[in-house]
Length: 213
Image (cartoon, rainbow, N blue to C red; front, side, top):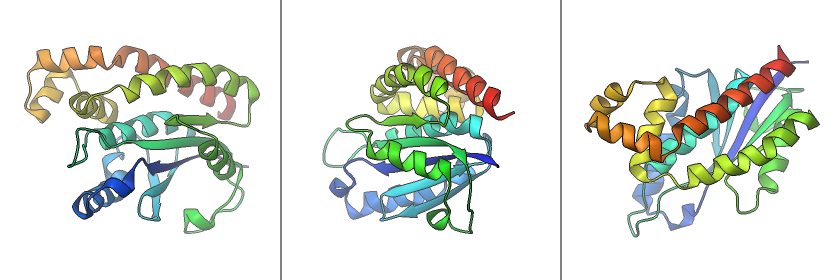
């Protein structure tokens, strides 16, 4: 049976968005398959205007994808206050038992684990569930720490982390893209704890590849 990865997410406090902000957010979500194409092929479905589901072609890339999505979302702020946009995201890894042209009518272990994970996420922003208890046990604590790190990313740090995550651009390249100095990029990556996030992502990939390859 094919093993896949499903990311289920919803935008936090979307009801506080203006009509213009909701339109911007929708366009951003719709552009994710293109934005994320350097990492892996994805399919996305948006429902209820502020919720989304992403199928990742390579299960081991699911966490990298989720963090990249969260970075681009957190690179925006509400017009009425200084709060950044954010999203709750749940990654489910497992079998894809029944697939149709629509994610909403497809089914399988990955879909169910992702949905249950989101339902139980509480005040957190990131949750991961797999069929393997040893993997779940290892990821539980590291995911809590990583979630706390990402929640602390500022708007500018989120922009820089997006460019680093999506293409692994050099500091100079990121600076050129965003119009900031290499020194500013270096300082922001350090503050965003990019090195720790990289270790976390690499370990996730190792764990999932060990189970699926």
